Structure formats: C-alpha cells, structure tokens
Image 1 (spheres, rainbow, N blue to C red):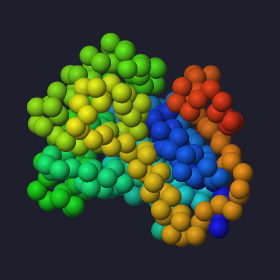
Image 2: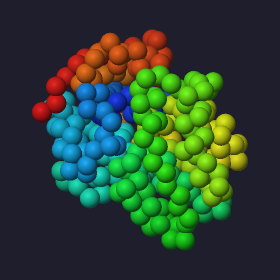
Image 3: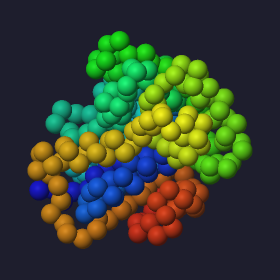
Image 4: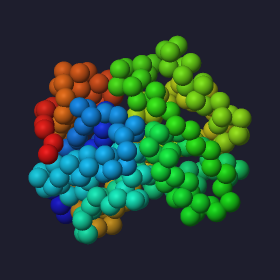
Amino acid sequence: MNNNAIGVFDSGVGGLTCVSELQKILPHEDIIYLGDTARIPYGTRSKETVFEYAKQDVAFFREHNVKMIIVACGTVSAVMMTYPIFNDGELSSGVLYPAVRAACDSTRNKRIGVIATSASIKSGGYGKAIREIIPDAKLVGKACPMFVPLVENGYTDRGNEVAKIIARDYLQVMIDEDVDTLIMGCTHYPLLRDIISDIMGEKVTLISPGAEAAKYALRTLSEKDMLTSNKQNGKLELYCTDSVELFTENVKTILGSDINGKIYRTVLK
C-alpha cells in the first residue's frame, strides 16, 4: 500500500480528462494536478523547450512526494521518447503508449489516424509506437493547432459553429483515408469529442489518451501493490501557473461545479 498522491500534469486543462477518469476508477486516491497555464501551448515549442518545461513540471511533483507521475500531455509524451525526463525507479506514465495500445487493439482495417499538436506530429512518436505493434499499419497524422486554444477558451459545445468549421477542416483527411480508429493525441482534444464524433461518424473509434493513461495507472499501481488504503474519497489539489480565476472556470467546466478540491497558483523553477 502507498497513500501518497498521484501526480498529473499538462500544459493547461486538457489533462483534467485524465483526472476525471482517475476519479472514476480510483476514487480513494489523492490526486495533485498541475496545469502550466502560463506557458500553454507546449505543442508549438521546440523539443528542447518542451524538455526544459517538462523537467520543471516533474521537479514540482518530486517536491510533493507523489507515488506516480502521469504525463497527461501528448507533446511531452512524444518528446520523452528522445529526451528522458525521469530518473531510474520513478513510477511514471505518458499518454502516448497507452493510447497507441488501445488504438492497435481497436483497429480492424489497420488504418489509424492521429490528431495532435504540431510538435507531437513532427516527433514521429505515434507512428513509431504503432508500427512496433502493427508493422504494416497505415498511419494518418494531422496537426490541429487550433484545438487547444478552442478548449482553453471554452469553445467545446457540440453546437459551436466555430469549432465545427475548424474540426471539419482538420478531420477531412481522416475521412478521405478511411481510418477506423482515431487517436485524439492531445488530452485537450477529448473535450471536443462530441464535435469530432459527429464529423467522423459512429463507425470510427475515438481513443482518449488521458482515459487510457488512467487505466494504465490502475493496472500498474495494482500490480505493484501501491494502491491507497484510504476508504474515503480522495483529495484533489489543483495548481496552475497563471490566473487562478480563469483556471477555476475551466476546471468547473470539465470536472463539474462541485470539484471538491483546492486550487492554487504556483511558480515553476
């Protein structure tokens, strides 16, 4: 047993999709969330810059003595394949490999789409990981840089015409290439799930990286006998690096108005 918290971080609020899933499947675990809102988006930065940001994010959680760190950021997860950010023995997970495994298990025609940030697509990480499992897979990648600002500014409703126009433009290539499985390779993107699903149709399976990472955390903590012994609902602490007011509004939109958690501003170093 281990009663320390699980740490989750992202460049903004997208990683809360992972927190939401963790609260469902591991309701007794304490969770600490960090959204680096002052420097969002990571997806338009260089690999070197993302690496430096990620090191500071991880250092924040080392100070909080968490038992596991979930990198709920597709960009950082992709960059980690080139620039390792964890020390030996640290329990951690990115969102890339759990999402890839779920996609490879799901696909029927071996045509898998990946929508992600520009940095994630350029890294080639998703393609490499998919072909390790399905060597002859057809991968269709598309950078969707406008999705993150849409989410961060609340343009996520199914009927939002601006979001629908942008999404149709981005997703047309996936329709043309007949993908049957689509990885939403940034944890912000599942917040646009209704819009994406309407465009892609019910025959296309959508993979949420945050949800898959949460399932991986459950399996790993169970196997290592590191689940909490607490019987009450776990505590939630949320940190951001910019406006607490704006962050709070976004948190309530994703987790609900009764978030039952404390929100703080922090400075990374």
